[in-house]
Image 1 (cartoon, rainbow, N blue to C red):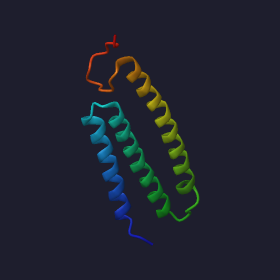
Image 2 (spheres, one colour):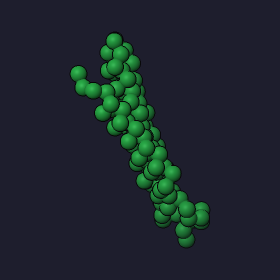
Image 3 (cartoon, rainbow, N blue to C red):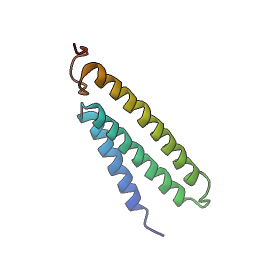
Image 4 (cartoon, rainbow, N blue to C red):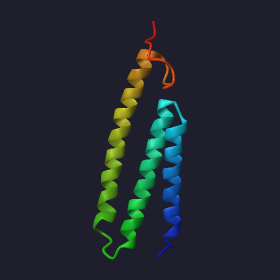
Length: 102
């Protein structure tokens, strides 16, 4: 069995990078990448916590499938929003004013 400090450090690193991407970036696609990194960190944390328990097959193996399904649905909806926004504004930068292109 592996030592559990490695996955916990990896989860903290992924969540930290995701939060930094959310707070520092203004590009819509890079914000989506930050959200996905934070979700990946949460997924690693859930799997590690599930592997740590006595009963391995309870939440440690079912809940990650739920998280991955939610993440996939979030990406589809968010990319549709970004593409629609790009068609109307011709840019995906979130700092620009909301003026439609001519």
